[in-house]
Amino acid sequence: MGDPVIDDGDPVISLRGVRAELGARPVLRGIDLTVNRGEVVALLGANGSGKSTAIRTVIGQVLVSAGEIELFGVPRRRFTDWRRVGYVPQRTTAAGGVPATITEIVASGRLSRARFGVLRKADHEAVRRAIGLVGLADRAKDSVNALSGGQHQRVLIARALACEPELLIMDEPMAGVDLASQEVLARTLREQVAAGTTVLLVLHELGPLEPLIDRAVVLRDGCVTHDGPPPQAVGQHALPGHDHVHPHAAHDAEPIRTGLLS
Amino acid sequence: MDFLDYAFMQRALLAAVLVGITAPAIGIYLVQRRQALLGDGIGHVAMTGVGLGFLLNASPVWMATGVAVVGAVLMELIRWYGKTRGDIALAMLFYGGMAGGVLFTNLAPTGSNANLTSYLFGSITTVSESDVTTICVLAALVVLVTVGLRRQLFAVSQDEEFARVTGLPVRALNLLTAVTAAVTVTVAMRVVGLLLVSALMVVPVAAAQQLSRSFAATFAIAVAIGVSVTIGGTVTSYYQNVPPSATIVLLTIGAFIALTALATPLARRRARAAAATQTAGDPAECVIPASREGAGKAGV
Image 1 (tube, rainbow over the protein chains, first blue to last red):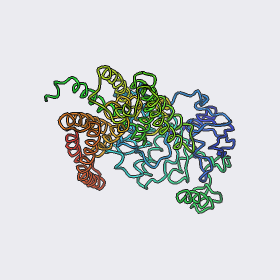
Image 2: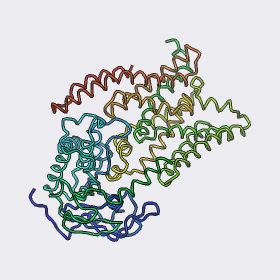
Image 3: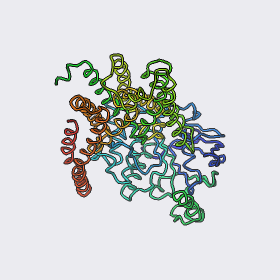
Image 4: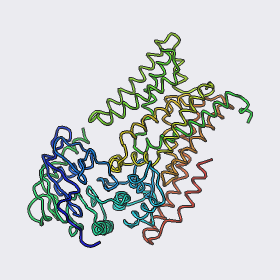
């Protein structure tokens, strides 16, 4: 425990000049991003600024058209040591098409440490521990279909923690989360950070996680516009506490509406 | 139990049991990925294989297996690369497969649509010794994959993006799922037919979901329902002059309706228990006996 060790010479994630397109639309236009061991870095930005895409290039879900990505000093394409990485995708639900218990879903996060998909006693222990970390121990055998939105998010985070990762990558973990769950999540994250876990997370606003953030990287139209201490609540679109009544919202909503009607 | 004296009935029942196990076993992963109708699509594509079997004077079952596997792989590829109009490409694959089956069957010197019918709607009582061998081998393969790789398939079917970050070979597992589904379709072809096979993949799973809270229980109940209805349908068709495939499918839907009716009060009790839990902060232990009782009935 104690203060996180920040060692500039040991980047856990490094993106250099990364470009990516979704379809024909350029989403990332050459971004540089470094996350050092023990750091907690927030990626901020408006809808469509490319922050989720940036995270998804790191895990290999979105292919890059130019630039280099390294994880723990290894080029992303050759990186295989996924047990060191815990990932929380952007989801509103942990449920699939078939009922599943919290334990069953969290156990799939342990597969990166299990040989041939066989979970041993220690693995089951780790799964139980991860569920306990997000305060759902008493509901471990419940179907996720019976959970609230915030509890779904807690399940997704437990799943990421099940492999006891050194690096946590989270895409909007606070989206649609009720206040009680926000507190649980902030506490869980605080414990992880205190234990030395490196964190890269996409946030819409800093919110209750603000005290944990070492550095904020703000994206705008696929470019990095700020990299440093978390910005204070003035001016720009992506800032904390900003209520989102900027033109982007109306602009984004328009095609959806016509799409449903036509 | 006099039906057990006949060799054709023994073969029919063995084939029925194997289909009752394998169809829901792979179907549960398709339902989990919300691709419930994939089996139906593969069934359409397999018709071309049956037609080719007639035309080339080869075994329709093995030809259908080959073509269904190719079709399933194509569908997976369309899902990866097909960006905007993937559904149109799939539709072309489905109907092209069906048209190909009719065309090839009629081109064959001995072929007619009547031959095709036994593959479309099944012909369980004409299952031969060699059919049984084929079905046993393929069924063993399906069980090996769906049970042996259950954790990996669960993870990929639940959340593909997350599964990639656990280092699982997501593409290989997706292909394996598609190929296993294709194999299952041809296993079931002789029993319920290509047009009805998807029902046995999907409906038992949907029925089991009415009672279960966990994936493991859904799997077990779905297989129990699958075996019950395939045996039930086959035996019914022995005593009553009804087509076994249609009887099996209607029994499956009957099981779904019965379990849904049973589950409604169960769900209410669970909701009440959950509400009590949230106020008392106590685990929902009281609902467990209810679910056991439900699971017991499903197995019958």
